[in-house]
Length: 255
Image (cartoon, rainbow, N blue to C red; front, top):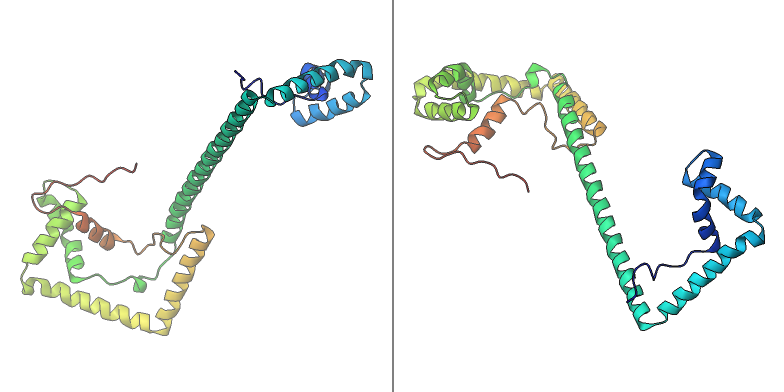
């Protein structure tokens, strides 16, 4: 049966000679670098007398004749086809691995850029008047968060937010009124500032600074911004909070 070694393409006389002399040449030039060894070897081969080349030329011809004879047979052709198919599969597998590595590297770089961008966004100074006003509920929660946390059996922010939502729903209109009045006043002040020339300029300058940070780190406009304050984070936590009596669900790990 023809083997993979048997159907290896025969080497030329030069490469047979180089195989026997590579170590010596490497020592002579003081370097094992392939390109430097090959350069020196090429010069030496050209200067080599025909008598010294002849043994390698004879061996090369012998190998080529054996190779040609083998692949002229049905067994040899079949072995050659199998070898080519294996080489093709190996090449495809190698390209797939390289693509996967490149995608992982790009994803890692993207995550790093997003983290750096998020930090940069939070460091952008923002006029207090540009901060969106809180609702009556969030004003009340800000004043009562510590008291609610103390009444809970856990300090989990999710549990505190859930408990706060339940308490707010059970409060009377009279109890909510002060916070609704304050929220309305803050919103009116915010809307007036945003509508003013000063507010428009401040808002545009802030957005430009944000975009500059995103452009620097090549991150899209969906990157986390300073607007993701306690209020928004609490809303997200409440949305994920389990219903009464239901055990919290663990997030599935990514495959």
